[in-house]
Image: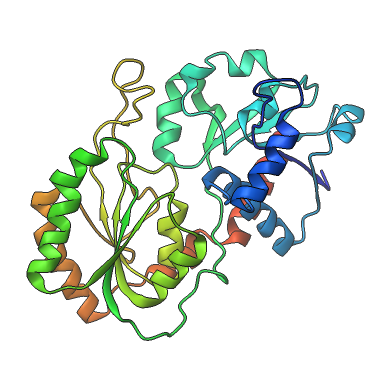
Length: 324
């Protein structure tokens, strides 16, 4: 296998009449500007960057080549409709931008020529294991450590509060986010805030240049590219890691009950400190501030050892070769 056959497309179905997706796409771009890449698209883009760095050639969305060479591996990075809406004769490496849970396609390996499915992290692999066994592998995409790097700019703010609470936000505003702000205010610690989905990448980069640390608030992450960009920037993280059940309301509690999950699935003591709830935030903040003063965190070192573009791309190539 000398050249990888990569496939990734965003879903964009017709809505009202056949082929109306094309003018709608143009209008969206004129009104909103270029679309911001989401987490799943970042998986594809960063994989391609990593392959470029390690010198592995690839084709992108060359469906004709795949049809003409049905013995070659098709690497369907995502999204699922690329697999579901086409007839594939090729063996398939599927992921890591897959569907949310195996209940969406319990007969995946029987219905489609999938040889291996990749998911972003270990707790998601465990969640899939009862359905798919050992045919699921955890693989995280790499972080662009050149783009996300310490700048040496003077730090003007103690904390960035990064709010990625996705469900029951009003309830968590009262029980978690508000108490976090109150504790920072009580101690005279300064902070700014970003809420997931309402900022540009440049806004996060600017915030990371200015803050000494991040308070990361998210129910759970399958990989967590944003907090890993923070770590790569040399900024330690105080992370809400509530554990417990996977909370996606499309599945929980009626269709799926899986635990434990994590907000920081790639992590060690160099990255920062975690806390479970507002009651444990104060003691965790004490320990965190003490370590900030001691300069004993080394978050970028963790990323450089584990999650570079080159390392993750090579792992992907090795997996593809093993199943080709």
